[in-house]
Length: 459
Length: 153
Image 1 (cartoon, chains in turn brown, orange):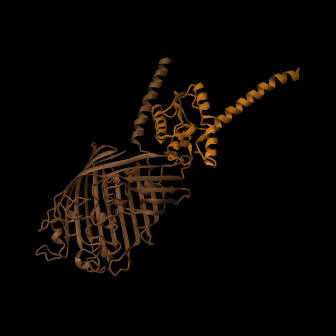
Image 2 (cartoon, one colour):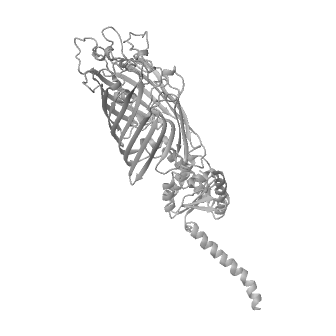
Image 3 (tube, rainbow over the protein chains, first blue to last red):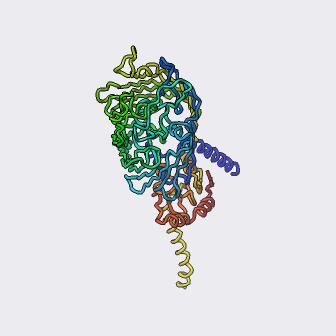
């Protein structure tokens, strides 16, 4: 009898140990999409305060050549400082806390995250720590959850997804230039000027902005929810925000409106790597105040962005495709806070080289193969961005990048990412020779490849 | 004589009736006891850690898988902060439903329910598979007396 009890206890211990291991595999993250993963907590099991975060440290090397005068432009340098062609950097170091302050009530939860790394969020503020997310979600109304505060606005998959599970090191051209909003230091074209290409070491900073990038975030309120119907999950989100990114307050009375819809056939799993087939569409519209013609009066410029996409993940394969367009406030590079690409366009908002009233579009396709039985993953991505393509398109710039990558997953929370970007940039209506000024190809023709390696650890 | 007999028999009849009533009532509230089960296990959850919720459900699942649903009598007793496992909107509700279908019983401590209701300011809504017991710890002692092994994952 005693022996039997001993055996029984031994079996129990083994089963409990097995459960511990199984528990380690199963994530307790809410099984939902980005809206739900970032905005809600699992009901009835969320902690009062879960401390979490991640660190990304990297090395990047750019192989672009200088122009004929031995000068460099931003695409040939490593951000956020834009002072060299190779750099070690702790580009992200974020720590935050999330949960539900009163665990008995699953209807209220919060999310707080701060950035300690060196990137375009913190660079403008001389490396200071910057809060990236601070939100409260009220889940009282079924079908209309309410999220308030600072958080990622609903939009493109590449922007909305959690960055610590992003499968590449750098953003695509279209996401980086069309969606990652830069906020100019002044509201008048008279107060800012183009920074000319620099020899290295640069005498003048090529980063002409002293405010954080938008980081795909806004301060406002969002109504959202997800509805499960059999194996499908349908989500919506409508957000109304300042349209001023991570910056404090609002710099004008214009507000941005964001609309997002998605439908996903859920295959298996939960959390950020849930397997499924998701289709989504989004639109955002707002206005920016800027004296673009230099007459001393601030004008309002529309800033509209739209996109559609699809994401498929069922291991060992992943596939994503996104197409997006933009009208107004087309960013023309960090040395051009005037939005003018060439001198005659600065101060002339309707000039084809001025992005204030211009259009742009781009698409990206990418895929991944998780090599069965190993910890390796192979990734490939192609993206193309057409900048200033509206009107006559006389100054249209085309950026094309093929990114080849691999990832080694040390474990579920730590991985190594290696990328090699084969890059091309061209002003499509201009030839390379002879280069009459202002021919953008003087600087673009030598934009070349870039190698990067990054280690991510989530805790 | 007749009255004397009735007087001495009545308490016995009442006792038997009460016992029968309690037995019938108990079988109506809890899932049927598995009398021929090879193992009897009571799992305790009294911790606020969400990971413990996953863990206790995993242990229950592993026991069912190992012995088979008919060979293990299994009850999960939740009290204190661990009672959150049995909240109606708990994110593990599908797993609870699945385990319940395999015969796993879920007990919810009434003392904790009273205390939490007071804190919450509104009635606590529990999972439909949760059965209220007067006190979680008393329920565990009762089950141990019936030969159950207590496991605290």
